[in-house]
Length: 236
Ligand SMILES: Nc1ncnc2c1ncn2[C@@H]1O[C@H](COP(=O)(O)OP(=O)(O)OP(=O)(O)O)[C@@H](O)[C@H]1O
Image (tube, rainbow, N blue to C red; front, top):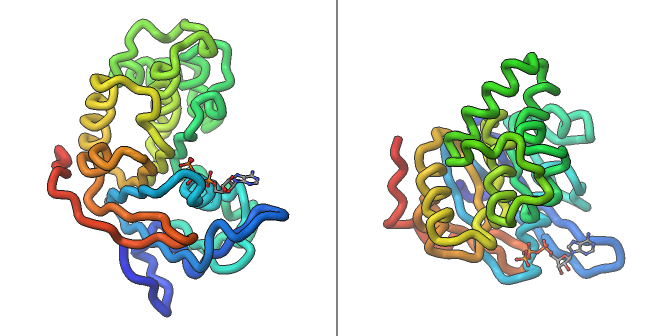
């Protein structure tokens, strides 16, 4: 991430300048926030409950709009829903709560949904979905009823629905909440093996240290550099 600059740089996949946001009737959550992500960068974001981390993620996805400041994604200014619609095709967002992500009756239908929407044939979509589930050690989960999965299983299926789309940038909001140690290790390995950039929000400093190079903190509505990890060892 670079310091806020006076000119636009196409090298940034994400570029937020002086962004402020408040929910109706509430105090300011984001207050002159600056944030940049370059191609391939892996950044972590930590901060107290209620400090605005999810709000920041929702703003990147265009689910809420800033009161002031600018959002540029993949070099394009986000001026309305039309712009975000295009940008969302390149962003893979894993919600904090898996129930916000999953909506199909079975696991394979959930994972294949985006692929089918993007024009893959049912045969291709199912084959790619099965491959992705295998990569997450979820072989045999294809026909499981999504809403009956455990919290951790739902988290992994959420990740599968996003990764299968091969986004340019991943946005992960608390990906390890409710997961056991073994599953967290699996996610650490998986993220380190990916060749895409990402932003991970987490309360687990050790998880961020293992999956991201630089860690930032959300404080007083702004994102500030905290430290560079010495545990981060991506496979690539
Ligand atoms: N839809 C909403 N309407 C009104 N206020 C909201 C809404 N969503 C979040 N807030 C408030 O905005 C503030 C920031 O919330 P946010 O969820 O972004 O924090 P967070 O850093 O992600 O917290 P946590 O670590 O607990 O997940 C909190 O005070 C929260 O109560």
